[in-house]
Length: 289
Image (cartoon, rainbow, N blue to C red; front, side, top):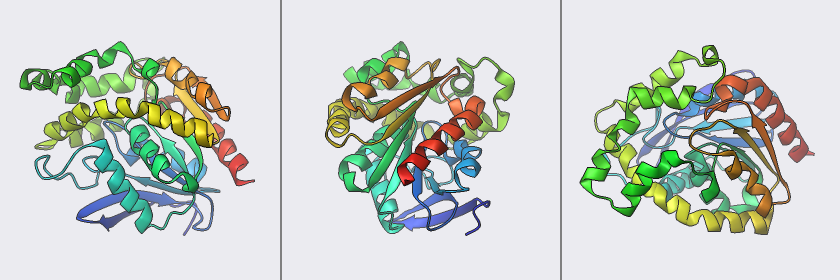
């Protein structure tokens, strides 16, 4: 495989077509990139070329996102347990026996489930605004918490705005000092997929199930304490959803956790991609030695 090429692939995992991007030397140390809401592996388009000069990079689209299949929510269980099960089948089918894990947003509860199930496979973890502590959740989660506490149709309907163009735009721009660094194809592509028929119900199912991620936080924290993986938290310090205390909290449970903040918002790669890429590259090099 040419290390300077990004290959766009699909693989059949059970009944699903999983889209993924792959680059880098086939025999190099592997890093698995797991995206978040509402995006896809497209968010890594600038990071992959930085890492793939020396590392084997694999970046799938989760079910319901990007170019991976998005079955109707009445025919597919859109829960984070199930997303992790699909990703487990994905890594098993690709025969990934050792890999570093990059998690962002929804990718964090999905990836941390993989870490719990496969501690022997994880060489290190990079969390980019990927939360595992209640102190990391901002007040922006309050309407969602109300839905968790009372999952009525009225509370569900009140959250439909979460998939609107305005909220997608906000996620990319809030906390960003220089908005000209945000490429318009990012939120435009995300919105294209969000606007697909039936997708709003997929996203609301995942929002509802996110409660179970918070309930699993103690298990994730126990994993950090027990296995103490080499860890790098790279965090936009103006993220409106996941606050800096959520990044600092990793150090409470894992003496091998390092935290670095960048003066930006939720999608930190959009504004600080080169800097974050350099920091991740150096982190991965330290694991390879």
